[in-house]
Amino acid sequence: MAIFVTRERCRVAITEVQAAHRVLLVDDDSAVLDMMSEVLKHKGFEVVAAPNVTEALRFIATESFDVLITDLHMPNPGDGFTVVTAMRHSQPNALTLLVSGYPDVQSAMAAIALEADEIIVKPFELGRVAELLHEKLHNRKPAARLTKESVGTILQRCIPIVIEDWLKGAKQSNELNHLKLSDEERTGHLPKLVEDLIVRLSRPSTTENDKASDSTLSTAAMAHGKLRFRQGYTPSMLIHESRILQVTLFGTLQKNLNSLDFSLLLPDVMTIADEVDAQLTQSMNGYMEVGKPKVVELKVVKPNVA
Image 1: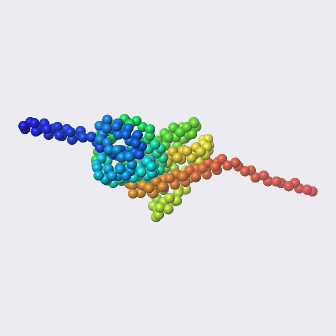
Image 2 (image 1 turned 180 degrees about the vertical axis):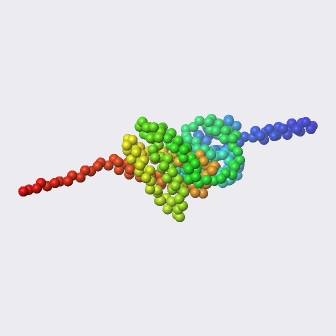
Image 3 (image 1 turned 180 degrees about the horizontal axis):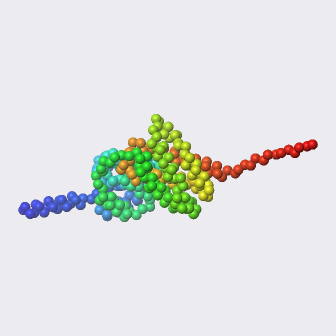
């Protein structure tokens, strides 16, 4: 009898260890909801499907989950974020994945602010999503208390990575990579532009309006525009590389979510956008200054009449 009880206890322990992870799946498309549910169940997950935000919020309030997978764009623009916010507040240890068909900069930054663990872009392989869940759940560790850093501090220590990622994006751009430039020529004054941005982020401001309008007078931006004119850039190329810089900066923040101080995130994001735009304006001024045709003043000399 004693042996039997021991084996039974072993069976119970094994069953508890192998218990399926519970997934809350939220999508207003019934076909997608059914398909993803079947695949995840086949991969060993226990799935609870919610066809709308109301149902999702009810499940979050009454049940426990290990994973949340929610569509970002449902009938209302903020639906996906509403679900993630509720899950973060109610069950902060749950893994959260946002599914989006067309992520833009605003959506990406909102996802960063919510600390979503992953953004999955459509179309995607359902099997790969299951593998991603297994991988993240297997490697997931209790969140350690990390020293929180400001946006400026993170960007300061990541300047080499920002330049490297920007350069990679520029080389992949059909609009920019047709010019035969070395890496040093291609980056131009970018390191100094990023440093100017960091200086502005560290500058104290008394109000949000001050923070959003106190752009830095950047001699590097003017020089950058002049350099780009000599290199054969068009105005649209200047705008395009500035856009790549914004995306690169936001991507750097996303990679450092665990150490990011979210209390100042939104004002700092506004500052980044404003400063990059201000630098673009100054670069364009430098560009136009070099390209402006020189006006030669002709002096008319009247002949002396005897």
